[in-house]
Length: 338
Picture 1 (cartoon, rainbow, N blue to C red):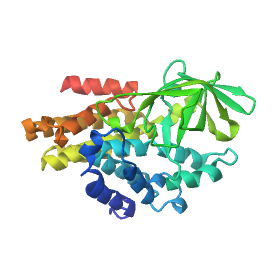
Picture 2 (picture 1 turned 90 degrees about the horizontal axis):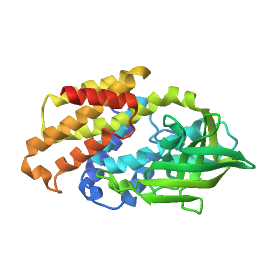
Picture 3 (picture 1 turned 135 degrees about the vertical axis):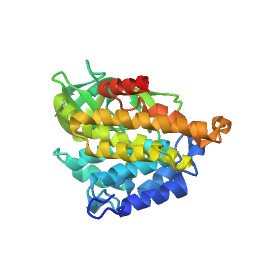
Picture 4 (picture 1 turned 180 degrees about the vertical axis):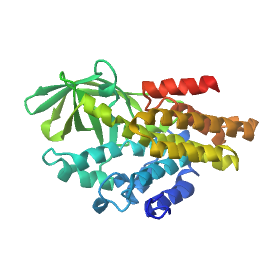
């Protein structure tokens, strides 16, 4: 919603139309497919949604406010989580190019990223995890070399670049835009997932992979990144809200409707230190709502033609995706108490 008048913004309204007219009707087909249809991602690009996190002069669908961005992610995730999941990874690169102070990054990359001409995946989990980095960066003449393994990259074969973080010996994150192509120094293997499998998620191994200096978007100390991390956690919370909203819509009026409003408000208003608990509450609600839909639907809910079974698997997926220790601990406590 737009905070100035309480009405949905143009971008939120259009996302809702695409969700109901295109993405939700095809969600079961995408769920069983090998990859997200190119037409889905092309449509989001043509409509301007690849520029959601960019400046308004580069996209007609740039979010007017952060709450607009959250709502758009929510409505698209509720329609087809797989499509939204691949598309959502892209915005980290847009934000990095928007704010980069490195020579040429904004001018070279931002227009292409905002238009969707260039589409990005995200490869950061290995570098930001607790303990030693799974992907290391070593300074060499003309740039860096990356070595190690990233266990989770979604959108392989559907994206052009990998927005990648590697950590150097001083615990500084080196962020760079790499070509999303296999090479002698970059190998991938496909992961088989119980939900969002058409996202084409892979594990990638880097072996002395050279990264030119001009591809580096920024250097960020790990501790600084961790201070900013709650903003990312909030963004991902909209995925769970989308699943809940879809379940509520299919169920009809129920007490879950008010819980959804509460969880959305809690995420929107959470202080940084409260975001993990709000994320956990949103994921738990999605899981519960999908279970309620399954029971209400009855035995037909286990047919592959039923949205209930898909939403249960997707809700279970969101219990662990983009998690942190604080989220996991809170979720376990909530689930055990219930």
